[in-house]
Amino acid sequence: MRSGMSGQRVKVDRVFHALGDATRRAILESLSRGPVSVSQLAEPLELTLAAVVQHLQVLEESGLVRTEKVGRVRTCRIDPEGLSVANQWIADRRSLWERRLDRLGNLLAETGEE
Amino acid sequence: MRSGMSGQRVKVDRVFHALGDATRRAILESLSRGPVSVSQLAEPLELTLAAVVQHLQVLEESGLVRTEKVGRVRTCRIDPEGLSVANQWIADRRSLWERRLDRLGNLLAETGEE
Image 1 (tube, each protein chain N blue to C red):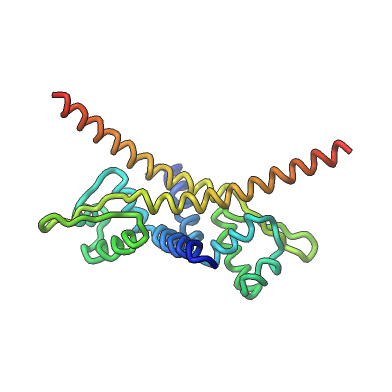
Image 2: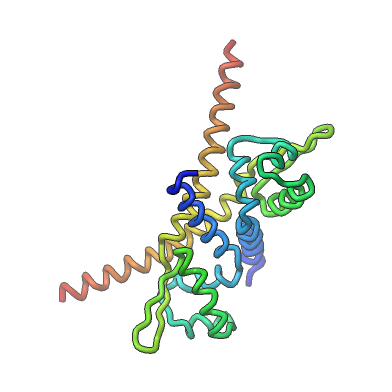
């Protein structure tokens, strides 16, 4: 496997692992309405700060979230990079599948013409 | 929560839980090249038939895969429904986020004009 391919594989694995958890998806849903602090994230989701910090670490490592600490407040925001990785993987599965359906359709059409 | 909303939530939860597993993603990668039997799926992935059947059940319940048994052979294929659910969730996160960036951009432009 080429190193470029396996780097992409690691990214895909991290992003889908991160998205596989309902609490982390709830965090992303909150953040898609705008940046918030860690404590503002924790409250509506009824999570401890420690739990949010742990989920944020997974989300940061997968490129789904960026955080920035200014003074004592850490602000979290969506990182579009991770969503792009997930989106691309899904689009690739669909396009391979759809191209296959197209080829089948052409084959059937050609068979019909004979 | 309205029943329509919670039905969609259940679908989203199932799809991302299913996509969160690397073996199930490998199964979807195989199937995007075309339909195969359960044993044809198992061999290159070095999985037991029992393991494949278990993963297929999760994939079927989440609308990512369809299987059909003819005689003694069960054929598996991609179901585009599940991929659409995942795609839509990602697109919604991105569009909320991008609309927010647009509003911020407009606000900055207006402030600059004053």
